[in-house]
Image: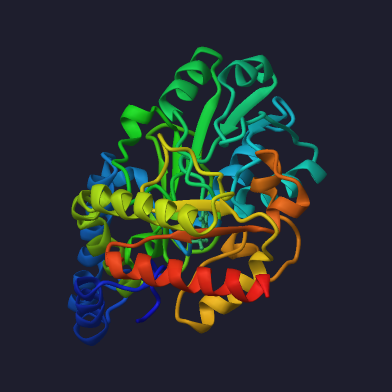
Length: 375
Ligand code: PLP
């Protein structure tokens, strides 16, 4: 049994083939005028069209970046620069990814005012509270589409409608949602959206930024003319081609959702049979089909995680991005968990290759751990 629950992080074979072909034959620099360069340029532009199509955008609204963290930094910092000191305020949520949270924290040291809209115990943003926070000083609302720890999907369309009425721009971190639910940036009404290839069986180290035509954007890496002068530096052509290929397969990935959701429900049922007092922190509706955050009262989630890892099952305690830190997850805290409950919580992510036997196997290992813990 290999990597039962982390299979969504591998690179799919079609993406691998595309990247291999580019690395072997299309090694030109897209900025060069000779044939190999022109061919590489075409590959980058083709991938841009593939990514744009998968989110219902125009290709000239897509900028490739090194990762979604870079895209999030780019929007938050260039907009702050653009508006400050005329307007000073950003409204966000307390359940953003660290690539947003820590950037906002930095911006506060530069004079930006950040206000966080409260969320309920499943992480849903309170629209009423959000509207109360909007004022003439606000230039941006930044709200994650689907949370990476609990899977909660926000109604970004509703948020954008309100924001528009107050002439406020909207950005949404769509990293976790991409490849799991349909993303239509026009329907969502956002001005900016950020993406990463590695959440949809693409390569790591390549991200994208959607910026609606005519919305403010300034160069976020200065240098050459690449990416319309916004993100200078020779393009990572093979990674971009891999991202394009991965995004071409988005509809196929989304078609696995029902089966993944069925397996998730099976997991919850089987787990509650062996430990009836579990608490599911993920909402049952408006939630990513593959994500489950579960609290196992009186169980040390780090120890359980290590045991599961020993048996080839990769799960996270809190956010994967914060596993090096022993702090309770800010997301779990924001939805009202105590430090103790947060330390008893694991996050499980199913992938398109997860099978019923993987679910049974995982629950068996958890049961084994519970029994050894009870001795
Ligand atoms: N946003 C969310 C919601 C994420 O889950 C992640 C990474 O897991 C990121 C942003 C950062 O993406 P990247 O690793 O491409 O910088």
